Length: 218
Ligand SMILES: N[C@@H](CCC(=O)N[C@@H](CS)C(=O)NCC(=O)O)C(=O)O
Image (tube, rainbow, N blue to C red; front, top):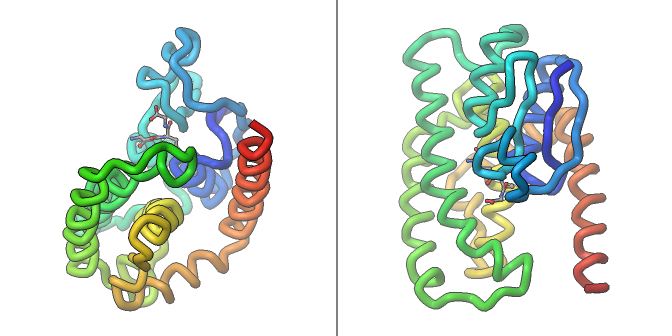
């Protein structure tokens, strides 16, 4: 059986878990935090989560895992069939990851772990995220889903990216990045109304509470 390694505080882990639940795939969850131990690097070479253990070996990187799942479990489809639309979905996913999620993550350590806020990160991140948001505004249909009528990976990826990025941007800049893309709030509302989203949000909340309690005790 497939084994998904990671834990429910990770938005990338939740993207893959959500995708597997949408596809009705049976899998086991293996609770692990990112780490640099040799045994973990043997299955996830960057020591990151998630990684997916298959009968042929392990795969890391969320979008790679999503592509694999789509090939092996094509129904229900989570990418558009038409090659151009499929390309567009992947383009949006990449833009959200590289130009919104990645720069926003520069503030993860200061917001969640109490590290000192770097002035250069403070100055540099916001303009980068603004460019990413402009790209998303340009490409997203948002009627009612990001690509139009069909729900898919692009919705899952964007929702979980924003779950983290918007929390960080709100905390550092008092800035609501969802409001920068008109209509995105309604699309998120629709995605969040799925049973799978509710289940994953509940698991995230529980992990987050545990994390906060442990941090207070440390
Ligand atoms: N590019 C990776 C990013 C995964 C990632 O950054 N996961 C975080 C947890 S949400 C992690 O493992 N962080 C530990 C690290 O960066 O070393 C993917 O697409 O899966």
